[in-house]
Image (cartoon, rainbow, N blue to C red; front, top):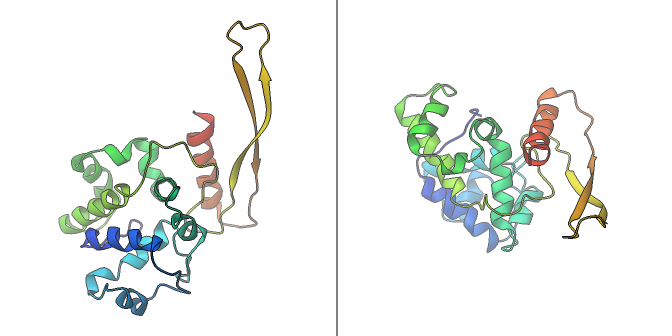
Length: 206
């Protein structure tokens, strides 16, 4: 799989993901499954790679917890935004508002990280922007941040105390958070790097 998967028809990608909320959960998303849902073009096949990349499918193409959570319309846009930020963590580390960047800025970023020519570059940018249009990046950060491409832990913020400051006339609340981090047993150091990058960006720098 390419580091940043892409497809020619980003409209098909958006339509497929949107239909997750109204269709059944398959055992696996194969080419036959795509065709049964009306995505019969060979240009639609990379949808599977993109869904794996954002951790909607696992390595064997089975729907993940993110797929299930996306079916809830009340949280779907924040779920996919969290997945996009994790999958494209390198981009969001450079541009925290990467989803708002114009095509030129995105082309400059991806041009040094992919091997393809101008057509591939355009489709890579188009895939990212199509995904971003489905997400709500302004919503409150999700408490559980999944890590793409691996056996991911959950980072959960658990409120432990709410203390009123009696000496403050405004009675301002001070919120202390207990961060519980459950790490998987793995030899893949990239998983740990992504965990702590996400923790630093979404918690410590807030």
